[in-house]
Image (cartoon, rainbow, N blue to C red; front, side):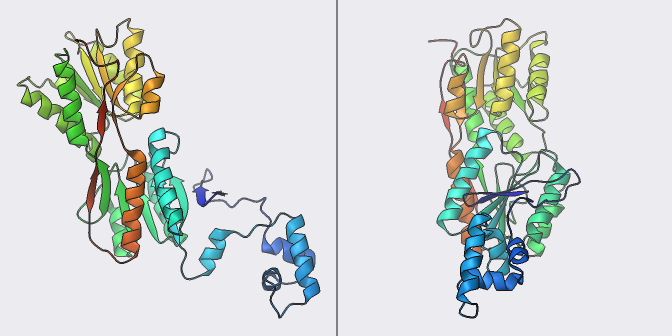
Length: 358
């Protein structure tokens, strides 16, 4: 189903994976049937073509208004040789992280005369491949994407280069020698967050991350480990739990950490979902945050202030990430073939959940 909201199309799928058109929209075909003329005739009548009688032009316009006919900009653009459409693939559109990035993409695209089609992989490798196929078939000019958690085979992404389809990746990326990307400073931010925990009274800092094959997980885990090395703290494998980026998995990871003979007194969670899962489990054990277990996550200021205690967090410039990804794609469409890796700075916001001392 394609739902037009401003200059954005959300492309959903049926259960069999096929895209579906919204059946309630009045089409030129509907107008032509009522008027008893051909579709091209109706189209010309609505445009006041001199080849069409004034009477038919007026009747066509009146009927279009009565039947709430609206020209489909997506279909109109496909009829031209310059679609001016950008496709986007995200793991979900529910979390604030991706919603904010999409806003940055949309605003930049619209300002440059492009429509946006948004598809979701639902963290599925198969959905991701199907999204690519659908967008290519829709003749988008380029694609902006974030990998699903399941994706370990990148051949479907590499194939886009073979057909000269411009691609910009963000957050979870791959094939960075072939495609430009936009990421946060994962290693540096995790290093700074871990150092903050050590500087404010924590001694056994654990790390909860997603699947190890994800570049974003590798970078943040490396930053965490580097901070331990900087402080000559032995690395304990049992304090590093990397599973799926999922609320229930985050709870399970926290449970396993708290069940250790020597549990951690601090946790660095690599995203907001895992951080809020850890917070729930810590509280369920009757432990205090930060006195018993300090906690730092990755999230935005709004969500961090909604919880109790307020969550110390690495904050992304998500809107800027979206803007940057879209600008890179538009530059690529204008002929710039330079492969760029853009790192967007983050900031560590200290609130109530992380400071044991002072």
